[in-house]
Picture 1 (cartoon, chains in turn cyan, blue):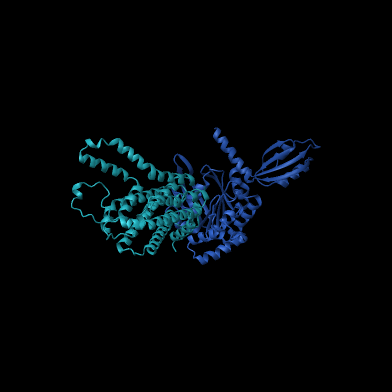
Picture 2 (cartoon, each protein chain N blue to C red; picture 1 turned 135 degrees about the vertical axis):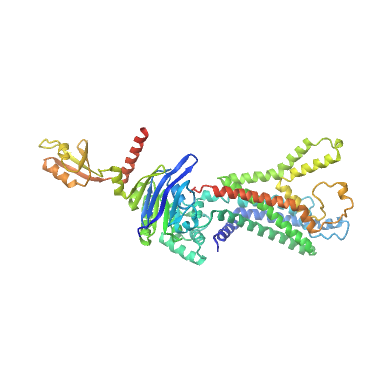
Length: 316
Length: 319
Protein backbone atom coordinates (compact mmCIF):
# COMPACT_ATOMS: atom_id res chain seq x y z
CA UNK A 1 0.00 0.00 0.00
CA UNK A 2 1.32 3.47 -0.79
CA UNK A 3 2.16 5.70 2.19
CA UNK A 4 -0.64 8.08 1.24
CA UNK A 5 -3.32 5.44 1.79
CA UNK A 6 -1.67 4.26 5.00
CA UNK A 7 -1.96 7.79 6.38
CA UNK A 8 -5.54 8.02 5.11
CA UNK A 9 -6.56 4.81 6.84
CA UNK A 10 -4.91 5.86 10.08
CA UNK A 11 -6.61 9.27 9.96
CA UNK A 12 -10.01 7.71 9.27
CA UNK A 13 -9.66 5.40 12.25
CA UNK A 14 -8.55 8.37 14.39
CA UNK A 15 -11.56 10.41 13.26
CA UNK A 16 -14.22 7.81 13.89
CA UNK A 17 -12.79 6.87 17.27
CA UNK A 18 -12.66 10.45 18.49
CA UNK A 19 -15.26 11.75 20.92
CA UNK A 20 -16.07 14.88 18.98
CA UNK A 21 -16.97 12.81 15.94
CA UNK A 22 -19.21 10.53 17.98
CA UNK A 23 -20.94 13.58 19.51
CA UNK A 24 -21.38 15.27 16.13
CA UNK A 25 -22.80 12.12 14.58
CA UNK A 26 -25.13 11.76 17.56
CA UNK A 27 -26.48 15.29 17.09
CA UNK A 28 -26.80 14.92 13.35
CA UNK A 29 -28.57 11.56 13.50
CA UNK A 30 -30.92 12.90 16.16
CA UNK A 31 -31.89 15.93 14.10
CA UNK A 32 -32.08 13.76 11.00
CA UNK A 33 -34.66 11.49 12.62
CA UNK A 34 -36.45 14.45 14.15
CA UNK A 35 -36.87 16.12 10.82
CA UNK A 36 -37.88 12.84 9.22
CA UNK A 37 -40.57 12.44 11.87
CA UNK A 38 -42.01 15.90 11.25
CA UNK A 39 -41.81 15.33 7.52
CA UNK A 40 -43.70 12.05 7.80
CA UNK A 41 -46.38 13.44 10.07
CA UNK A 42 -46.97 16.42 7.79
CA UNK A 43 -46.61 14.83 4.41
CA UNK A 44 -50.30 14.01 4.13
CA UNK A 45 -51.22 17.64 4.58
CA UNK A 46 -48.58 18.67 2.11
CA UNK A 47 -49.98 16.33 -0.49
CA UNK A 48 -53.50 17.61 -0.03
CA UNK A 49 -52.25 21.15 -0.61
CA UNK A 50 -50.81 20.24 -3.97
CA UNK A 51 -53.30 21.41 -6.55
CA UNK A 52 -52.72 19.04 -9.40
CA UNK A 53 -52.87 15.47 -8.29
CA UNK A 54 -50.10 14.40 -10.60
CA UNK A 55 -47.33 16.14 -8.66
CA UNK A 56 -44.58 13.63 -9.31
CA UNK A 57 -42.17 14.74 -6.60
CA UNK A 58 -43.79 13.37 -3.49
CA UNK A 59 -40.67 11.62 -2.31
CA UNK A 60 -38.54 14.77 -2.28
CA UNK A 61 -40.96 16.23 0.26
CA UNK A 62 -39.39 13.92 2.84
CA UNK A 63 -36.39 16.22 2.73
CA UNK A 64 -38.18 19.54 2.57
CA UNK A 65 -41.53 19.39 4.36
CA UNK A 66 -41.86 20.90 7.79
CA UNK A 67 -44.66 22.22 9.96
CA UNK A 68 -42.62 24.98 11.50
CA UNK A 69 -41.91 23.25 14.82
CA UNK A 70 -38.81 21.58 13.50
CA UNK A 71 -36.78 22.54 10.43
CA UNK A 72 -36.60 20.12 7.54
CA UNK A 73 -33.71 17.85 6.71
CA UNK A 74 -31.91 20.14 4.28
CA UNK A 75 -32.10 23.11 6.65
CA UNK A 76 -30.46 20.96 9.30
CA UNK A 77 -27.73 19.94 6.91
CA UNK A 78 -27.01 23.53 5.99
CA UNK A 79 -26.85 24.44 9.65
CA UNK A 80 -24.96 21.49 11.17
CA UNK A 81 -22.84 20.55 8.15
CA UNK A 82 -20.38 23.41 8.68
CA UNK A 83 -20.01 22.48 12.33
CA UNK A 84 -19.19 18.92 11.30
CA UNK A 85 -16.62 20.14 8.78
CA UNK A 86 -15.01 22.46 11.32
CA UNK A 87 -14.89 19.79 13.99
CA UNK A 88 -13.17 17.33 11.63
CA UNK A 89 -10.46 19.73 10.51
CA UNK A 90 -9.67 22.31 13.15
CA UNK A 91 -6.73 20.43 14.68
CA UNK A 92 -5.51 18.60 11.59
CA UNK A 93 -2.07 20.21 11.40
CA UNK A 94 -1.48 22.09 14.64
CA UNK A 95 -2.15 19.09 16.85
CA UNK A 96 0.63 17.20 15.08
CA UNK A 97 2.97 20.04 15.89
CA UNK A 98 1.80 20.27 19.49
CA UNK A 99 2.13 16.54 20.08
CA UNK A 100 5.62 16.57 18.60
CA UNK A 101 4.68 13.96 16.01
CA UNK A 102 5.12 16.20 12.99
CA UNK A 103 8.88 16.01 12.72
CA UNK A 104 8.80 12.29 13.43
CA UNK A 105 6.28 11.57 10.68
CA UNK A 106 7.92 13.89 8.17
CA UNK A 107 11.27 12.16 8.73
CA UNK A 108 9.72 9.00 7.32
CA UNK A 109 10.12 8.49 3.59
CA UNK A 110 6.94 10.33 2.56
CA UNK A 111 6.41 13.56 0.68
CA UNK A 112 5.40 16.42 2.86
CA UNK A 113 2.17 17.05 0.97
CA UNK A 114 1.14 13.41 1.50
CA UNK A 115 0.27 14.34 5.05
CA UNK A 116 -2.05 17.27 4.37
CA UNK A 117 -3.61 15.60 1.32
CA UNK A 118 -4.22 12.42 3.30
CA UNK A 119 -5.81 14.34 6.16
CA UNK A 120 -8.15 16.10 3.76
CA UNK A 121 -8.94 12.86 1.95
CA UNK A 122 -9.63 10.98 5.19
CA UNK A 123 -12.08 13.59 6.46
CA UNK A 124 -13.73 13.80 3.07
CA UNK A 125 -14.25 10.03 3.02
CA UNK A 126 -15.71 10.15 6.53
CA UNK A 127 -18.09 12.95 5.54
CA UNK A 128 -19.15 11.24 2.32
CA UNK A 129 -19.90 7.96 4.03
CA UNK A 130 -21.82 9.76 6.76
CA UNK A 131 -23.94 11.76 4.34
CA UNK A 132 -24.75 8.84 2.09
CA UNK A 133 -25.66 6.74 5.09
CA UNK A 134 -27.98 9.48 6.37
CA UNK A 135 -29.52 10.15 2.99
CA UNK A 136 -30.19 6.49 2.32
CA UNK A 137 -31.53 5.99 5.85
CA UNK A 138 -34.03 8.79 5.37
CA UNK A 139 -34.98 7.38 1.97
CA UNK A 140 -35.32 3.87 3.33
CA UNK A 141 -37.42 4.82 6.31
CA UNK A 142 -39.50 7.12 4.15
CA UNK A 143 -40.04 4.32 1.68
CA UNK A 144 -41.34 2.03 4.42
CA UNK A 145 -43.51 4.74 5.92
CA UNK A 146 -45.21 6.19 2.85
CA UNK A 147 -44.95 3.15 0.61
CA UNK A 148 -44.35 5.06 -2.61
CA UNK A 149 -40.99 4.38 -4.24
CA UNK A 150 -38.98 7.32 -5.60
CA UNK A 151 -38.80 7.81 -9.34
CA UNK A 152 -35.42 7.69 -11.04
CA UNK A 153 -35.38 11.46 -11.28
CA UNK A 154 -36.15 11.90 -7.60
CA UNK A 155 -33.39 9.48 -6.78
CA UNK A 156 -30.91 11.40 -8.93
CA UNK A 157 -32.01 14.66 -7.33
CA UNK A 158 -31.40 13.25 -3.87
CA UNK A 159 -27.98 11.93 -4.92
CA UNK A 160 -27.04 15.34 -6.31
CA UNK A 161 -28.29 16.95 -3.12
CA UNK A 162 -26.05 14.62 -1.09
CA UNK A 163 -23.06 15.34 -3.32
CA UNK A 164 -23.69 19.03 -2.98
CA UNK A 165 -23.86 18.71 0.81
CA UNK A 166 -20.52 16.90 0.75
CA UNK A 167 -18.98 19.75 -1.25
CA UNK A 168 -20.44 22.22 1.17
CA UNK A 169 -19.06 20.44 4.23
CA UNK A 170 -15.75 20.01 2.38
CA UNK A 171 -15.56 23.78 2.08
CA UNK A 172 -15.87 24.19 5.84
CA UNK A 173 -13.44 21.34 6.36
CA UNK A 174 -10.84 23.08 4.22
CA UNK A 175 -11.44 26.38 5.92
CA UNK A 176 -10.77 24.77 9.28
CA UNK A 177 -7.68 22.97 7.93
CA UNK A 178 -6.48 26.38 6.79
CA UNK A 179 -7.00 27.73 10.31
CA UNK A 180 -5.22 24.69 11.72
CA UNK A 181 -2.17 25.51 9.60
CA UNK A 182 -2.21 29.18 10.59
CA UNK A 183 -2.98 28.92 14.30
CA UNK A 184 -0.59 27.22 16.65
CA UNK A 185 -3.31 26.41 19.20
CA UNK A 186 -6.15 24.05 18.33
CA UNK A 187 -8.57 26.13 20.44
CA UNK A 188 -7.79 29.29 18.46
CA UNK A 189 -8.35 27.59 15.15
CA UNK A 190 -11.60 25.96 16.33
CA UNK A 191 -12.92 29.30 17.55
CA UNK A 192 -11.90 31.06 14.34
CA UNK A 193 -13.74 28.43 12.34
CA UNK A 194 -16.86 28.72 14.48
CA UNK A 195 -16.68 32.51 14.26
CA UNK A 196 -16.67 32.42 10.46
CA UNK A 197 -19.54 29.96 10.50
CA UNK A 198 -21.62 32.15 12.85
CA UNK A 199 -20.82 35.19 10.78
CA UNK A 200 -22.12 33.61 7.60
CA UNK A 201 -25.10 31.87 9.11
CA UNK A 202 -26.37 34.76 11.27
CA UNK A 203 -24.69 38.12 10.80
CA UNK A 204 -24.09 38.12 7.07
CA UNK A 205 -27.81 38.33 6.29
CA UNK A 206 -28.24 41.17 8.75
CA UNK A 207 -25.39 43.13 7.23
CA UNK A 208 -26.79 42.65 3.75
CA UNK A 209 -30.18 43.88 4.97
CA UNK A 210 -28.60 46.99 6.46
CA UNK A 211 -26.73 47.67 3.24
CA UNK A 212 -29.79 47.21 1.09
CA UNK A 213 -31.88 49.46 3.33
CA UNK A 214 -29.22 52.15 3.29
CA UNK A 215 -28.84 52.01 -0.47
CA UNK A 216 -32.38 51.64 -1.62
CA UNK A 217 -34.32 54.84 -2.32
CA UNK A 218 -38.06 54.83 -2.01
CA UNK A 219 -39.26 52.18 -4.47
CA UNK A 220 -42.02 54.48 -5.56
CA UNK A 221 -39.54 56.82 -7.19
CA UNK A 222 -37.51 54.13 -8.86
CA UNK A 223 -37.47 53.14 -12.44
CA UNK A 224 -38.25 49.51 -13.03
CA UNK A 225 -34.79 48.84 -14.47
CA UNK A 226 -33.26 50.50 -11.41
CA UNK A 227 -35.29 48.30 -9.13
CA UNK A 228 -34.19 45.26 -11.08
CA UNK A 229 -30.51 46.29 -10.86
CA UNK A 230 -30.88 46.98 -7.17
CA UNK A 231 -32.35 43.52 -6.58
CA UNK A 232 -29.60 41.91 -8.58
CA UNK A 233 -26.89 43.76 -6.65
CA UNK A 234 -28.25 42.59 -3.31
CA UNK A 235 -28.47 39.08 -4.75
CA UNK A 236 -24.83 39.15 -5.77
CA UNK A 237 -23.82 40.34 -2.32
CA UNK A 238 -25.78 37.48 -0.78
CA UNK A 239 -24.00 35.02 -3.00
CA UNK A 240 -20.67 35.86 -1.43
CA UNK A 241 -21.76 33.69 1.45
CA UNK A 242 -21.21 29.94 1.00
CA UNK A 243 -24.24 29.30 3.20
CA UNK A 244 -26.40 31.21 0.77
CA UNK A 245 -24.92 29.43 -2.23
CA UNK A 246 -25.70 26.13 -0.62
CA UNK A 247 -29.26 26.95 0.30
CA UNK A 248 -29.91 28.32 -3.22
CA UNK A 249 -28.56 25.17 -4.76
CA UNK A 250 -30.37 22.73 -2.46
CA UNK A 251 -33.69 24.52 -2.82
CA UNK A 252 -33.47 24.23 -6.56
CA UNK A 253 -32.44 20.59 -6.48
CA UNK A 254 -35.03 19.47 -3.96
CA UNK A 255 -37.92 21.63 -5.20
CA UNK A 256 -38.20 21.15 -8.94
CA UNK A 257 -40.84 23.90 -9.11
CA UNK A 258 -38.18 26.55 -8.43
CA UNK A 259 -37.54 28.09 -11.82
CA UNK A 260 -35.16 30.89 -11.10
CA UNK A 261 -32.94 32.12 -8.33
CA UNK A 262 -33.02 35.80 -9.23
CA UNK A 263 -35.79 38.28 -9.94
CA UNK A 264 -37.72 37.59 -13.12
CA UNK A 265 -39.33 40.26 -15.22
CA UNK A 266 -42.88 39.82 -16.49
CA UNK A 267 -41.51 39.42 -20.03
CA UNK A 268 -39.44 36.45 -18.94
CA UNK A 269 -42.31 34.80 -17.14
CA UNK A 270 -44.94 35.32 -19.82
CA UNK A 271 -45.60 32.21 -21.79
CA UNK A 272 -43.85 29.94 -19.31
CA UNK A 273 -45.76 26.83 -18.36
CA UNK A 274 -45.94 26.56 -14.54
CA UNK A 275 -44.48 23.07 -14.40
CA UNK A 276 -41.49 21.61 -12.56
CA UNK A 277 -38.09 21.74 -14.24
CA UNK A 278 -36.38 18.57 -15.39
CA UNK A 279 -33.25 17.57 -13.47
CA UNK A 280 -30.85 18.74 -16.17
CA UNK A 281 -32.38 22.21 -16.16
CA UNK A 282 -32.31 22.42 -12.36
CA UNK A 283 -28.65 21.50 -12.35
CA UNK A 284 -27.99 24.06 -15.04
CA UNK A 285 -29.71 26.64 -12.88
CA UNK A 286 -27.51 25.95 -9.84
CA UNK A 287 -24.32 25.36 -11.79
CA UNK A 288 -22.88 28.80 -10.89
CA UNK A 289 -23.57 28.15 -7.21
CA UNK A 290 -21.93 24.73 -7.35
CA UNK A 291 -18.93 26.15 -9.17
CA UNK A 292 -18.64 28.91 -6.60
CA UNK A 293 -18.69 26.45 -3.73
CA UNK A 294 -16.06 24.22 -5.35
CA UNK A 295 -13.90 27.25 -6.11
CA UNK A 296 -14.07 28.43 -2.49
CA UNK A 297 -13.11 24.91 -1.36
CA UNK A 298 -10.17 24.76 -3.75
CA UNK A 299 -8.94 28.22 -2.73
CA UNK A 300 -8.97 27.26 0.95
CA UNK A 301 -7.17 24.02 0.22
CA UNK A 302 -4.58 25.65 -2.01
CA UNK A 303 -3.86 28.27 0.65
CA UNK A 304 -3.46 25.72 3.41
CA UNK A 305 -1.33 23.52 1.14
CA UNK A 306 0.98 26.41 0.33
CA UNK A 307 1.30 27.56 3.93
CA UNK A 308 1.91 24.04 5.15
CA UNK A 309 4.61 23.33 2.58
CA UNK A 310 6.48 26.45 3.66
CA UNK A 311 6.10 25.83 7.34
CA UNK A 312 9.27 25.28 9.32
CA UNK A 313 9.33 21.78 10.77
CA UNK A 314 10.68 21.93 14.28
CA UNK A 315 10.25 19.68 17.23
CA UNK A 316 7.48 21.48 19.19
CA UNK B 1 34.52 0.97 5.91
CA UNK B 2 36.29 4.28 5.87
CA UNK B 3 34.08 6.35 3.62
CA UNK B 4 32.04 9.38 4.52
CA UNK B 5 28.32 8.82 4.95
CA UNK B 6 27.41 12.42 5.75
CA UNK B 7 29.04 15.28 3.94
CA UNK B 8 28.10 18.90 4.44
CA UNK B 9 29.85 21.28 2.12
CA UNK B 10 29.89 24.97 2.90
CA UNK B 11 26.26 25.17 3.98
CA UNK B 12 24.64 28.34 5.23
CA UNK B 13 21.14 28.76 6.58
CA UNK B 14 19.67 32.18 7.15
CA UNK B 15 16.38 33.10 8.78
CA UNK B 16 15.91 36.66 7.62
CA UNK B 17 18.99 38.49 8.78
CA UNK B 18 19.84 35.88 11.39
CA UNK B 19 22.41 33.32 10.32
CA UNK B 20 21.69 30.02 12.05
CA UNK B 21 24.38 28.01 10.27
CA UNK B 22 27.39 29.75 8.82
CA UNK B 23 29.51 28.21 6.03
CA UNK B 24 29.67 24.85 7.71
CA UNK B 25 31.74 21.88 6.57
CA UNK B 26 31.28 18.54 8.24
CA UNK B 27 31.97 14.92 7.40
CA UNK B 28 30.91 11.83 9.31
CA UNK B 29 32.50 8.46 8.60
CA UNK B 30 30.69 5.17 8.43
CA UNK B 31 30.02 3.29 11.68
CA UNK B 32 31.30 5.98 14.00
CA UNK B 33 29.48 7.62 16.87
CA UNK B 34 29.69 11.30 16.11
CA UNK B 35 28.83 13.97 18.65
CA UNK B 36 27.65 17.47 17.81
CA UNK B 37 28.32 19.47 20.90
CA UNK B 38 27.19 23.00 21.45
CA UNK B 39 25.09 25.28 23.59
CA UNK B 40 21.40 25.82 22.88
CA UNK B 41 20.74 27.83 19.76
CA UNK B 42 24.07 26.98 18.19
CA UNK B 43 22.41 25.67 15.04
CA UNK B 44 22.65 21.95 15.76
CA UNK B 45 19.00 21.19 15.12
CA UNK B 46 18.94 23.31 11.98
CA UNK B 47 21.93 21.39 10.64
CA UNK B 48 20.20 18.12 11.37
CA UNK B 49 16.99 19.26 9.66
CA UNK B 50 19.03 20.14 6.59
CA UNK B 51 20.60 16.68 6.56
CA UNK B 52 17.10 15.19 6.47
CA UNK B 53 15.93 17.57 3.79
CA UNK B 54 13.26 19.00 6.10
CA UNK B 55 14.77 22.46 5.65
CA UNK B 56 16.60 23.77 2.64
CA UNK B 57 20.01 25.35 3.10
CA UNK B 58 20.33 28.92 1.85
CA UNK B 59 23.54 27.89 0.10
CA UNK B 60 25.89 24.93 0.01
CA UNK B 61 25.22 21.23 -0.45
CA UNK B 62 24.28 18.37 1.85
CA UNK B 63 24.77 14.75 0.94
CA UNK B 64 23.86 11.75 3.03
CA UNK B 65 24.91 8.26 1.85
CA UNK B 66 25.90 9.92 -1.41
CA UNK B 67 22.38 11.30 -1.96
CA UNK B 68 21.62 15.00 -2.06
CA UNK B 69 19.21 15.68 0.81
CA UNK B 70 17.83 18.89 -0.62
CA UNK B 71 16.78 17.52 -4.00
CA UNK B 72 16.05 13.92 -3.03
CA UNK B 73 14.86 13.88 0.58
CA UNK B 74 12.73 10.74 0.24
CA UNK B 75 15.70 8.49 -0.50
CA UNK B 76 17.65 10.05 2.35
CA UNK B 77 14.77 9.59 4.77
CA UNK B 78 14.60 5.92 3.79
CA UNK B 79 18.14 5.44 5.08
CA UNK B 80 18.18 7.78 8.03
CA UNK B 81 16.34 7.31 11.29
CA UNK B 82 15.71 10.59 13.10
CA UNK B 83 14.78 10.95 16.74
CA UNK B 84 13.74 14.56 17.35
CA UNK B 85 14.20 16.33 20.63
CA UNK B 86 11.24 15.62 22.90
CA UNK B 87 9.73 13.07 20.54
CA UNK B 88 5.93 12.80 20.40
CA UNK B 89 3.63 9.87 19.75
CA UNK B 90 -0.05 9.45 19.05
CA UNK B 91 -1.34 9.21 22.58
CA UNK B 92 -4.51 7.34 21.70
CA UNK B 93 -2.59 4.54 20.03
CA UNK B 94 -0.66 1.89 21.95
CA UNK B 95 3.13 1.76 21.79
CA UNK B 96 3.09 -1.02 19.25
CA UNK B 97 0.48 0.67 17.06
CA UNK B 98 2.69 3.72 16.86
CA UNK B 99 5.61 1.57 15.73
CA UNK B 100 3.54 -0.38 13.23
CA UNK B 101 2.39 2.89 11.68
CA UNK B 102 5.99 4.06 11.22
CA UNK B 103 7.03 0.70 9.82
CA UNK B 104 4.17 0.69 7.33
CA UNK B 105 5.05 4.20 6.19
CA UNK B 106 8.45 2.72 5.41
CA UNK B 107 6.89 0.13 3.15
CA UNK B 108 6.54 -2.86 5.48
CA UNK B 109 3.49 -5.08 5.14
CA UNK B 110 1.20 -5.25 8.16
CA UNK B 111 2.53 -8.65 9.21
CA UNK B 112 6.19 -7.75 8.90
CA UNK B 113 5.54 -4.48 10.68
CA UNK B 114 3.91 -6.18 13.65
CA UNK B 115 6.67 -8.77 13.95
CA UNK B 116 9.50 -6.29 13.89
CA UNK B 117 7.63 -3.88 16.19
CA UNK B 118 7.49 -6.59 18.86
CA UNK B 119 11.16 -7.40 18.27
CA UNK B 120 12.34 -3.82 18.64
CA UNK B 121 10.17 -3.11 21.66
CA UNK B 122 11.86 -6.06 23.33
CA UNK B 123 15.23 -4.76 22.29
CA UNK B 124 14.74 -1.37 23.90
CA UNK B 125 13.28 -2.98 27.00
CA UNK B 126 9.60 -2.15 26.59
CA UNK B 127 8.26 -5.68 26.16
CA UNK B 128 5.95 -5.30 29.15
CA UNK B 129 4.33 -2.14 27.80
CA UNK B 130 3.60 -3.21 24.24
CA UNK B 131 -0.15 -2.75 24.56
CA UNK B 132 -0.11 0.30 26.79
CA UNK B 133 -1.33 3.60 25.36
CA UNK B 134 1.61 5.81 24.38
CA UNK B 135 0.00 8.64 26.36
CA UNK B 136 0.63 6.70 29.56
CA UNK B 137 4.35 6.20 28.91
CA UNK B 138 6.85 7.99 31.11
CA UNK B 139 9.35 10.32 29.55
CA UNK B 140 12.14 7.74 29.61
CA UNK B 141 9.87 5.11 28.09
CA UNK B 142 8.82 7.52 25.36
CA UNK B 143 12.44 8.13 24.54
CA UNK B 144 13.09 4.39 24.29
CA UNK B 145 9.99 3.95 22.18
CA UNK B 146 11.45 6.72 20.02
CA UNK B 147 14.61 4.71 19.61
CA UNK B 148 12.61 1.63 18.64
CA UNK B 149 10.72 3.83 16.21
CA UNK B 150 14.00 4.89 14.65
CA UNK B 151 15.41 1.38 14.50
CA UNK B 152 12.35 -0.29 13.02
CA UNK B 153 13.02 1.20 9.61
CA UNK B 154 16.46 -0.49 9.59
CA UNK B 155 18.43 2.69 9.07
CA UNK B 156 22.05 3.07 8.01
CA UNK B 157 22.37 6.26 9.99
CA UNK B 158 20.65 7.31 13.20
CA UNK B 159 20.40 10.99 14.02
CA UNK B 160 19.51 11.82 17.59
CA UNK B 161 18.72 15.41 18.51
CA UNK B 162 19.23 16.02 22.24
CA UNK B 163 17.99 12.51 23.01
CA UNK B 164 18.75 12.64 26.70
CA UNK B 165 17.10 15.91 27.71
CA UNK B 166 14.68 15.37 30.54
CA UNK B 167 15.67 11.82 31.51
CA UNK B 168 17.09 10.97 34.92
CA UNK B 169 20.83 10.07 35.20
CA UNK B 170 20.41 6.28 35.30
CA UNK B 171 17.99 6.50 32.41
CA UNK B 172 20.53 8.53 30.47
CA UNK B 173 23.28 5.98 31.08
CA UNK B 174 21.10 3.07 29.99
CA UNK B 175 19.97 4.97 26.94
CA UNK B 176 23.49 5.88 25.89
CA UNK B 177 24.71 2.33 26.38
CA UNK B 178 21.81 1.12 24.29
CA UNK B 179 22.75 3.46 21.46
CA UNK B 180 26.44 2.60 21.50
CA UNK B 181 25.68 -1.11 21.74
CA UNK B 182 23.45 -0.88 18.69
CA UNK B 183 25.98 1.08 16.75
CA UNK B 184 28.73 -1.45 17.43
CA UNK B 185 26.49 -4.46 16.89
CA UNK B 186 24.85 -3.43 13.64
CA UNK B 187 27.49 -1.05 12.33
CA UNK B 188 25.05 1.85 12.30
CA UNK B 189 26.48 5.35 12.08
CA UNK B 190 25.19 7.50 14.91
CA UNK B 191 25.06 11.27 14.91
CA UNK B 192 24.23 12.60 18.30
CA UNK B 193 23.64 16.22 19.26
CA UNK B 194 23.82 17.40 22.81
CA UNK B 195 24.74 20.28 25.03
CA UNK B 196 25.87 17.91 27.75
CA UNK B 197 29.62 17.42 27.65
CA UNK B 198 29.88 14.33 29.76
CA UNK B 199 27.38 12.32 27.80
CA UNK B 200 29.11 13.12 24.57
CA UNK B 201 32.47 12.29 26.09
CA UNK B 202 31.14 8.93 27.28
CA UNK B 203 29.91 7.65 23.97
CA UNK B 204 31.34 9.53 21.02
CA UNK B 205 34.30 8.48 18.89
CA UNK B 206 34.47 11.80 17.22
CA UNK B 207 32.98 15.14 18.02
CA UNK B 208 32.52 18.60 16.67
CA UNK B 209 32.22 21.69 18.80
CA UNK B 210 29.50 23.87 17.47
CA UNK B 211 29.01 27.50 18.38
CA UNK B 212 26.96 30.17 16.66
CA UNK B 213 26.52 28.18 13.48
CA UNK B 214 30.17 27.32 13.12
CA UNK B 215 32.30 24.35 14.00
CA UNK B 216 35.20 25.67 15.98
CA UNK B 217 37.01 22.38 16.43
CA UNK B 218 36.53 18.73 15.66
CA UNK B 219 38.27 15.44 16.29
CA UNK B 220 38.29 13.02 19.19
CA UNK B 221 38.58 14.27 22.73
CA UNK B 222 42.41 14.22 22.70
CA UNK B 223 42.59 15.93 19.32
CA UNK B 224 40.32 18.63 20.61
CA UNK B 225 42.52 19.33 23.59
CA UNK B 226 45.59 19.54 21.36
CA UNK B 227 43.76 21.91 19.05
CA UNK B 228 42.46 24.15 21.78
CA UNK B 229 45.29 23.93 24.28
CA UNK B 230 48.17 23.97 21.86
CA UNK B 231 51.34 22.60 23.40
CA UNK B 232 50.10 22.16 26.92
CA UNK B 233 47.63 19.31 26.93
CA UNK B 234 48.47 18.12 30.47
CA UNK B 235 48.23 19.73 33.85
CA UNK B 236 49.86 18.12 36.82
CA UNK B 237 49.06 19.46 40.21
CA UNK B 238 51.49 18.75 42.98
CA UNK B 239 51.09 19.52 46.67
CA UNK B 240 54.43 20.40 48.20
CA UNK B 241 54.90 21.22 51.86
CA UNK B 242 57.78 23.44 53.07
CA UNK B 243 61.08 21.80 52.60
CA UNK B 244 64.27 21.29 54.55
CA UNK B 245 66.81 22.45 51.99
CA UNK B 246 64.99 25.71 51.42
CA UNK B 247 65.01 25.41 47.64
CA UNK B 248 62.55 27.28 45.49
CA UNK B 249 60.19 24.62 44.15
CA UNK B 250 59.25 26.63 41.09
CA UNK B 251 62.83 26.97 39.94
CA UNK B 252 63.48 23.30 40.44
CA UNK B 253 60.40 22.33 38.49
CA UNK B 254 61.14 24.66 35.63
CA UNK B 255 64.36 22.76 34.97
CA UNK B 256 62.39 19.69 33.91
CA UNK B 257 62.09 19.27 30.18
CA UNK B 258 58.58 19.74 28.89
CA UNK B 259 57.30 22.06 31.61
CA UNK B 260 55.80 25.19 30.12
CA UNK B 261 54.16 27.19 32.87
CA UNK B 262 53.71 26.89 36.58
CA UNK B 263 51.09 28.54 38.71
CA UNK B 264 50.84 28.41 42.47
CA UNK B 265 47.90 28.41 44.86
CA UNK B 266 49.29 28.20 48.39
CA UNK B 267 51.02 24.82 48.48
CA UNK B 268 49.48 23.45 45.30
CA UNK B 269 51.50 23.90 42.15
CA UNK B 270 49.74 23.55 38.81
CA UNK B 271 52.29 22.54 36.24
CA UNK B 272 51.31 22.72 32.59
CA UNK B 273 53.40 20.51 30.37
CA UNK B 274 53.56 19.36 26.78
CA UNK B 275 53.84 15.66 27.58
CA UNK B 276 53.13 13.28 30.41
CA UNK B 277 56.04 13.77 32.83
CA UNK B 278 54.34 12.96 36.12
CA UNK B 279 57.01 10.50 37.28
CA UNK B 280 59.80 12.93 36.36
CA UNK B 281 58.20 15.64 38.46
CA UNK B 282 57.79 13.30 41.41
CA UNK B 283 61.46 12.31 41.24
CA UNK B 284 62.68 15.92 41.07
CA UNK B 285 60.55 16.95 44.02
CA UNK B 286 61.63 14.05 46.20
CA UNK B 287 65.32 14.31 45.22
CA UNK B 288 65.46 18.00 46.04
CA UNK B 289 64.31 17.20 49.56
CA UNK B 290 60.82 18.63 49.38
CA UNK B 291 57.84 16.83 50.87
CA UNK B 292 55.45 15.65 48.22
CA UNK B 293 52.03 15.02 49.74
CA UNK B 294 49.78 15.15 46.70
CA UNK B 295 50.21 14.53 43.02
CA UNK B 296 47.52 14.37 40.34
CA UNK B 297 47.57 14.32 36.62
CA UNK B 298 44.67 16.11 34.99
CA UNK B 299 43.72 15.55 31.40
CA UNK B 300 41.62 18.21 29.81
CA UNK B 301 38.05 17.07 29.84
CA UNK B 302 35.31 18.63 27.82
CA UNK B 303 34.51 20.95 30.69
CA UNK B 304 37.86 22.60 30.26
CA UNK B 305 37.47 22.55 26.52
CA UNK B 306 34.12 24.22 26.83
CA UNK B 307 35.24 26.77 29.36
CA UNK B 308 38.38 27.53 27.43
CA UNK B 309 36.37 28.19 24.35
CA UNK B 310 33.95 30.48 26.09
CA UNK B 311 36.74 32.37 27.79
CA UNK B 312 38.18 32.91 24.35
CA UNK B 313 34.79 33.95 23.08
CA UNK B 314 34.32 36.53 25.79
CA UNK B 315 37.80 37.95 25.31
CA UNK B 316 37.10 38.14 21.64
CA UNK B 317 33.90 40.05 22.24
CA UNK B 318 35.55 42.47 24.63
CA UNK B 319 37.97 43.50 21.92
